[in-house]
Length: 50
Image 1 (tube, rainbow, N blue to C red):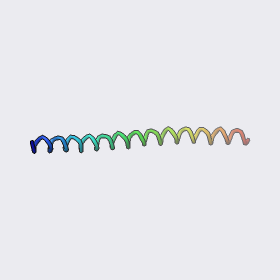
Image 2 (image 1 turned 135 degrees about the vertical axis):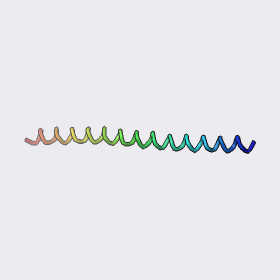
Image 3 (image 1 turned 120 degrees about the vertical axis):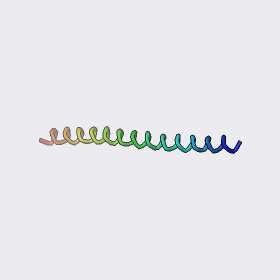
Image 4 (image 1 turned 90 degrees about the vertical axis):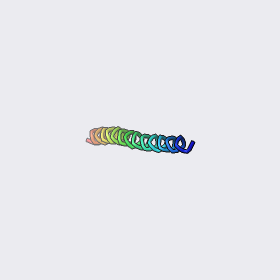
């Protein structure tokens, strides 16, 4: 019984780490998307001001 709980907690830990990694990757993707959108918006604004 003890071994099972150890493997369960180990699996849970690896799942949590995996979740954090994918979450961080998703955040980075979102940031780059937002950066692109903001960059485009700034370009458009500059064109309108001319």
